[in-house]
Amino acid sequence: MAKKTTFVTKEQIEEIVKAYPTPFYLYDESGIRKNAENVYKAFSWNEGYREYFAVKATPNPFILKILKEYGCGVDCASIAELKMAVKCGFSGEEIMFSSNDTPAEEYEYAAKIGAVINLDDFTHIEFLEGIIGDKFPELMSCRYNPGGVFTMGNDIMDSPKDAKYGMTKEQITEAFKIMKTKGVKRFGIHAFLASNTVTNDYYPTLARELFELAKELEEKTGADIEFINLSGGVGVAYKPEQTPNDIDVIGEGVKKAYNDILVPAGMGDVKIFTEMGRFMLAPYGVVVTKAIHEKHIYKEYIGVDACAVNLIRPAMYGAYHHITVAGKEDAACDHVYDVTGSLCENSDKFAIDRKLPKIDIGDYLILHDAGAHGYSMGYNYNGKLKCAELLLKENGEVSMIRRAETLKDYFATFDFCDILENADEI
Ligand SMILES: *Cc1c(COP(=O)(O)O)cnc(C)c1O
Image (cartoon, rainbow, N blue to C red; front, side, top):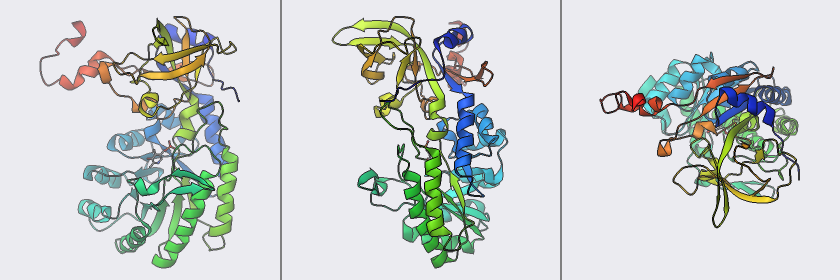
């Protein structure tokens, strides 16, 4: 079994906590940069390739600006995400708007800033027309849902027929015909058929399916297909026994499908887009938290100062996040613990029956692979506050890229009445 290592040491953490108390998120700038570079290298065979980073994974302007340096665009699904993108300097076709169940004001804003609108449903053609009129943008995209189950070899990866997203083949065909009459000249196809795939075959398999569809759509509708958006779903190895995806192999697999299907069809100028979130950021962010209690009842518990408010994935999905006890990287994992947060919810456990080294009060625990869908899924149950996000820079310095929430932030929505005046002084 591969040993999972992390990018931060106990000595570094001891320095950081002098300025920033635990818990906090820590992101590894050099890891983020190296990975972004590798992603672009893996798809460099495709001239128009672009990664549209899924903002929901790590909605932090400092992170978005790092990715922008590599040529990344952003994939947004709400007004807040669109506005953050604009604030970070993304514009026009650098912004993909892949939303669903979309409110009118979000379409209106997306159209206003010239984002590429990716329609989730056939009925949204009329809905959009009600907002922006019958002159549609020149470049638009539609989301495809093939139904059935998505399999690779003998493995069932996911069940598109049960997913709320996308259009059927008949609908997308009809949609392209109608959109042409409304001025759309350049088309995109988008699909997201399986999440957190830890296999190098997901993108290539999806690509084959979408390339065949693209050929068929061009034939049937005469639409000029400019891009194929493989969306997200490329996973990371959360567990030590998993083999991480190899983005070079993935890029080569997509290239082969491209050369097999699109090039012979005279479609060798189609751009490949991706909308990865998890793969771009998850391994390059951790939660650092301190052991503050130990409890011996029917099981052994370690209570830490982070809770599901900071990282909800274990509580929500039973997701595995590897834990390193800082400074005890090489110690024997001869203790079995439940590692818990403080919420009044028994699901608030970062680990259940986890073999770990003996943990002492004051030890720092590093929760791995929290860089995507980590901070951003946070909530405020029990009035617990969200923690800070820090960036470990390439030169070894640490800078704060989001401050921790304060009680004042938590009470801010009561600012229309006097009940919480002077809340800070109570
Ligand atoms: C969530 C999402 C992504 C990113 O997914 P990852 O699993 O983080 O790669 C990309 N596109 C869309 C439309 C999404 O909803």
